[in-house]
Length: 583
Image 1 (tube, rainbow, N blue to C red):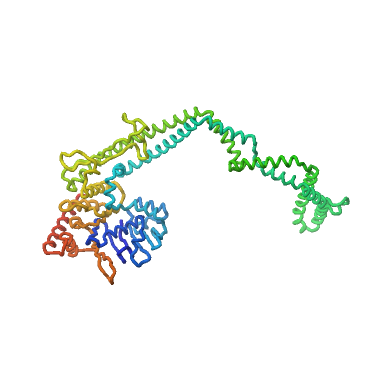
Image 2 (image 1 turned 30 degrees about the vertical axis):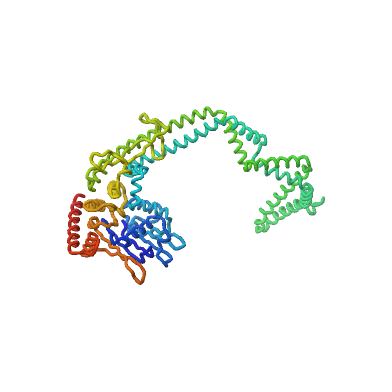
C-alpha cells in the first residue's frame, strides 16, 4: 500500500508530506484547493507522462517521492526481484519510488534508490495501484473495452486460456502467410522460375571455389612482378649456398656450426641451451633453400596466363558487386537458388503440404477460440448477476444488465452455422446492455446512462474486479460525479466495503462519502508572502465534524449543520461496524 507521499515544487505545492493509512482515506477541501494535484503527483509515481508546466513558478525542478509497503503483494515482490530492484523480500516492506523533473524536461526515476526507466515503473505500478478518474467513464462507454473487462474479471483462468489462444493464433498467422506466399509464387511461377534459373546458371558457370580469389590474387602478383621475384629468389639462393667452395654458404656453415657446437656440448653442458634453436634454424634454411631452388626452376613469365587470371578476378568482382556478397556467401546463395528452383518445380506438392498445415493450425485455433468463447460466456453470466447485485446495492431501483457476447463475422472459419473471423483476442465481441427502468428494453450502455449512473456502474465494476485482482491500492477521483443524497451514502458504503480488503484513496465533495473515512485529509489553499500554497492536515474529532458540516452546508458551520454532521458520522460508524462484521 501507499504509506506516504512527499511532494516538492509541484504546481502550487511548495513542500508537502502526506501520510496515508490502510483502509479508507478521504481527501476533501474547497473547490480549487488542490486536491486533484495529489492524484497528479501519484500519477508521476506510477509512470504517467511528466509535464514541465507542473513545476512550481520560479523553481528549476519538482520532486515526488512515494513510500510503499509491498510485503503482502507477491506479484510486486516477484517483479522487483526479477528486475534486481530489491535484494531480498524484506526490502519490499519499505520501498521508495522517486520521480524528478527539471525545466529542461530531464526526467529521472529511482526505485529503491536504483536509477530506473519510466517503462519499468509503469509495468511495476500496474501490479499494485488502480486510479479511477473521469477518463474511465469514457473507457466504460467505449464498446471495444467491454470484452477486455470480461477477460479482466476472468482472472488467471482466462489469462492462461488466452496464452494458449495467442500461441495458436501466431502459428495460424505464420502458416497462412507461408501458404499465401507460395500461392502467390505459383501465380508468378513461370517468370519467377525463369529468373531463378538465369541467376543459378550465372553462378554455376562461374564455378566458384572457397579460397580461389586469394590464390588468384597471389598468382597475379607473382606474374606481374616476375623480374623482381626472379632477382629476390636468386639473391636468396646465393646467400644460402655461397660460392663453389661453400665459403659463404649459410646452409653449409650453419650445419657446420651445429656439428661443432654438438662436440663442444660434450665438454661444456652450458652449450646445450643453444643447440635446439641452431638445429631448428638449420632445418628452416634447408627447407627455404629447397623451396627457392624448386620455385626458380619452375618460374616463367606467361603473359597469357596473367591475362586469364586478371579476367577471372574481374568476373568474380563483378558478381560480388552484383549480389553484394563475398565468395562464401555466393557459394551458399548458389545452393539456395538450386533449392528454390527444385521447390518451385515441385510447387504443387509444397502447396498441398502447406495447405494441410494451414488447415491443421486453423482447426487448432478454432478449438482454442471455442474454449475462449465458452469461458467468456460462462464468466459473463456470473458477471451479470454480480453487477446487478452491486448496482442494486448502489441504489438503482430496477436494473437489468447483460454482457452480450457474440461472434465477429468473417470468412476465416465456420462456427455454429456462422462464418467467423479470427482476431488477436479471439472470435468474440462484447457489448454491455442495460435497462434502468422497469418495463424498458435492454439498450446499449453507451446510449442510456447519465454521468451519475456511469459513476455508480463504474464503482460496481471496480468492486467486482477488485475481488479478482491483486491490486492493493485503489484511487477514486470524482467518483461522486452526478450523485447526492441517499445514493451518495450507499456509494460511501460501497467504497468502504472495498477498503476492508484494499487501501482506498478517494477525493470527494460529498459529506456522505467523507463520513466513512478511516483517515480524513483536509487540503486548504492559502497565501503566504504573496505566494499561493496548500496545506494538508489530518482531521480528528471535532475538526473532522466541522469539515463534514462545511461539506453539508457549503457555508460557514452552524449549530444545525454540526449536529447533522455528527448524526451522519454516527450513522456511517454503525454501517461500518456492520460491514466489518460481515467479513
